[in-house]
Length: 402
Image (tube, rainbow, N blue to C red):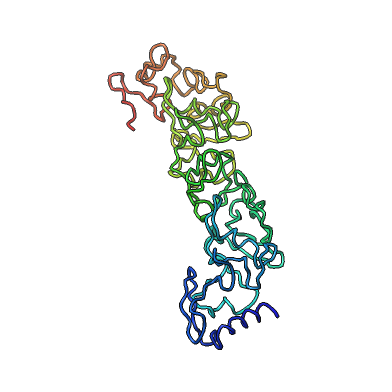
């Protein structure tokens, strides 16, 4: 006898006409309502499938108990949570009826697979292939974090298909938004509510595979920089040498200086308010260079960064507006300590005509330089600040306010 016939026959054997009369069995959470007309006083989900431990097979409605049987498979692996995942509710894969004769319950075989909210999280469209005995494009198995995620076989229940790294890489290839994922394997840095410092999933959190990307309250230096500054080193790949483009001259630009105005991060990059903001971690390295007001100051500056030569050109900061065609050679980002920023490399002493050809800079710029052509102590904020300071020395502008 086929399963469909056996199932229907079994139900009818409990009491003639029970299904046709619409006698309800309340199945949500699997409590029950007593049935009338001679039927048993209590019927629960596991009277037809599952066991006292829960409604999920084994046992199937035909009595199968081996996970190699498609009616059993990985039911209990999904419905009983562990350190790797929360318990998946029955409604994530099936219609859960309120009555035994509700549509989608006992009105056909095989049982219908109707994916729920979790399986389709992130805008996915999961599919069940009964012939191949597997699910595809499901959030639960990493479809939003790589090249389609894992495609596990439902009847292989030996732990290999749920091992860490099988659903997404460590780190994943992409974020849940589809951008390149930062190349970190120390997951707990960004996901402290989900992963422990030793890389193991937190068994108490219940936040793994929950449909939400939990990102901790991170400071910038969680991914680059250190306790002194968010600017590399180290960069996002762990490099610390200035010969690495991710490190380069970051620290030479950012932070206090005795010869130039402090440069903010937003002069070269979009600065996010939150880690997943557009322009931050939504593309593969290298990081996008987006010049700010300082680099474009002067009205004629047209800054460009060459990622192949690791050099900048056309920016105010390196004297582009003080030469007919810019400085003699663009500064190389990774050439830290080689004289790229020596006095006279960004503009002549004095700058080229039509600037007055005088070498007594302090006559006009006494607030900025002294009679030895050195930056006045405490006045570095007036050098490379986007302005031409010609004030008399008794009326020098004060430092910028935070």
